[in-house]
Image (tube, rainbow, N blue to C red; front, side, top):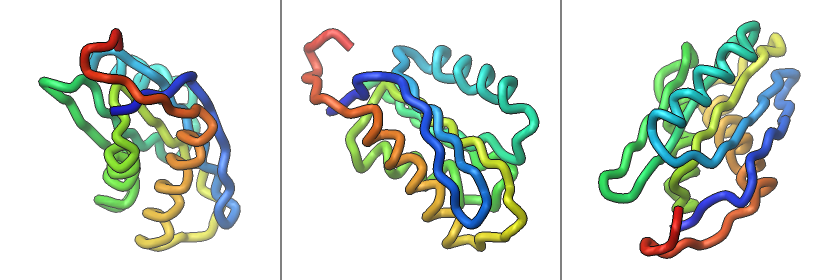
Length: 134
């Protein structure tokens, strides 16, 4: 299992749409939800604030939200990236400012995945064993 070493914010532009990714290390689901709420307040003028998080090991909480994007095109792809990287105790919020060009279903999926991957790379990850302090 892996965790991010630092909180980051990255930006990706895809066909004039801006995708701002905020990636935070959290300890509880309540903390993850608080980060989401704070970022939605900060980026209130954005078209979408899509989210995904994984918290804990046993029990493990996983949630995602498309926040108005077509179903399955934002939160689920972001959550899948977190799972593939075997991350936990992490919350990702991708804030989208629409640039006027529709990306289509596959374009949205690829953009949200790419935004999450870019932020994870910027945050760097380290391996943690279950018995280590999280």
